Image (cartoon, rainbow, N blue to C red; front, side, top):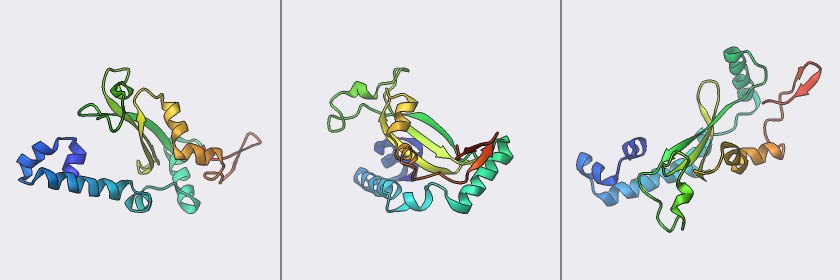
Amino acid sequence: MIYKLAHGTSATHIVDWFNVATSTIRKYVDIVFDALCDQNKLFSNYISIPYGDLLKKVIDCFHDLIGLFNIYDSINDTHIPLPSLPNKRVTLVANDFFNRKKIHNIMMQAICDAKKRFWNVYVGQLSGVHDGGQFKMSSVYRQLKNREILQEPMVVVRRVRCRPW
């Protein structure tokens, strides 16, 4: 199942390569997706916003790497190509998933630390959404805006107190 997720290949190809039934592939892909994506399962145990001593280590690592103070993450979006058009249960307008490069896809926003460890992943915006729009739809944006996360440590830069950035 990990092979299918990693390579994006169809269940039909995996049937031939690994000699398993298509229904088995679909069943276990669903189980793996559920374990990876459910906030109460693997996702929250391995992908989480750093805080306390861990956040301090992340900030120190970025400082050692790039020489800037109080940096806690690197964020980027990428387009994930869809092997086929979404069916009508997902959307009535397949062109919602059609980007400026004329490819059908969805967007993924990933946030990682200086050692390239993910601490937040957000997938699902339509491919026509700008990176800033993707960020504003994410839980991280809402948490930052509501001052629920990343309020400390404060540093003073030219006599101005600054939160992590």
